[in-house]
Image (cartoon, rainbow, N blue to C red; front, side, top):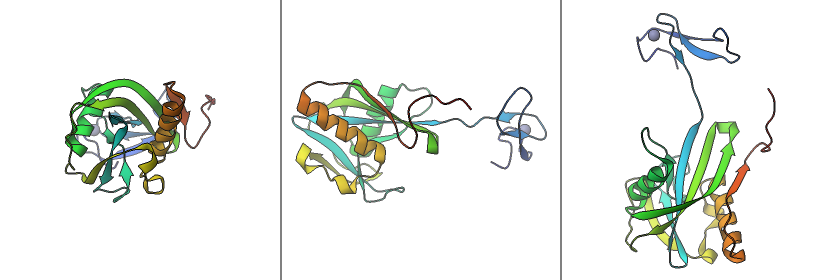
Length: 183
Ligand SMILES: [Zn+2]
């Protein structure tokens, strides 16, 4: 960030009084522009014994397969975000079920959340951000062509729970242990 989004003046990286981190602070109006982690929300959308995957038409990971997912928007719930992303990327309407996985990615300041969901009908096709969409069974998942580590982890958990018949909520961290570390 170079300029204040409120008044247009340059910002400087400084630690505000009472704070402990560098922030972008406006040199004219004093606004502190906080930057916080982003939430990515997606769905494991089931139809019978298959799940919906999308092949990405955009970077990052153009051409790779993913669960429908994307950045949460303001004023929506996480479940609404999962349904919206599935509609946008696969033109599919889902009924959102239980939250299935939450994956911390502190190295890129993101949190990824995936819900279990059901396709309302077996109707889907690529949205603007997808090259292709497909319903795949467990043994058809293209493991070496998945776009994101969080998707791989979530699908591993999904298959393990499917096999055991015991559905659990999965929380893990990629890149750093889950335990809270003091600064
Ligand atoms: Zn300003």
